[in-house]
Length: 222
Image (cartoon, rainbow, N blue to C red; front, side, top):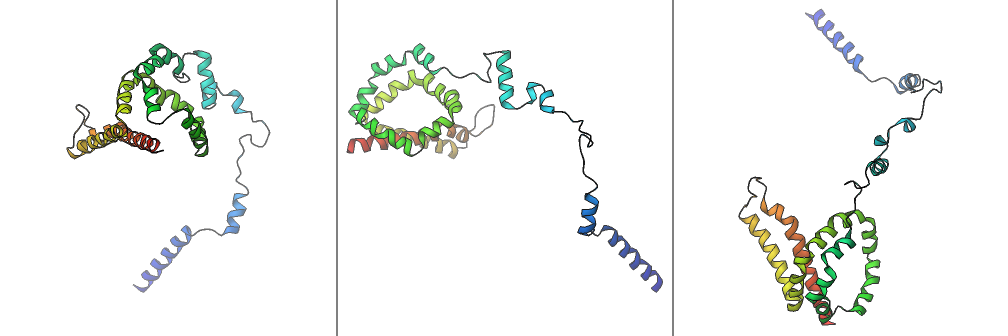
């Protein structure tokens, strides 16, 4: 029995030694002989970038390739803000709604705008807009321009009332989103939470309305 125990201990020791890490010196010696070269050290390698098709050379190359195929592609297309403003006749709609005169009535005139421009640069708003041109042109601008025919009368009415109208809009948007969450409302046929999905619109709307109301109130107090 004693011989069997000694044999078992010896076997376990040999197994442990097999899995023990090698010394750093031995590792360095072994690694120095295992360097791999794609050209096998003969200088026969070639520039893979030159032989790659345009589709595989990165995002910028891919966009240029798509432009060569079709200039009216969805990848590089930019929303034409000026053309849509002209087509929707938004300048005349703004005048007809009296938005500019009502803004001036609330204290936002050209002199005030001139004072706000340095603040916009100071807080990095212009740099932020410059660094996110694609997002502003292709996402924010379409929402504002296409919705302007419906938004201008609403904004004009709110300006006529004053800051209270914007505070009321902020409270209404936030309250509606809270109600959707409280009732566990879901979007039909999809099953998603109506509060979560609606919050993507209602919460920014509430924040913007509150900021607009605060700004108008501060202008009136000057």
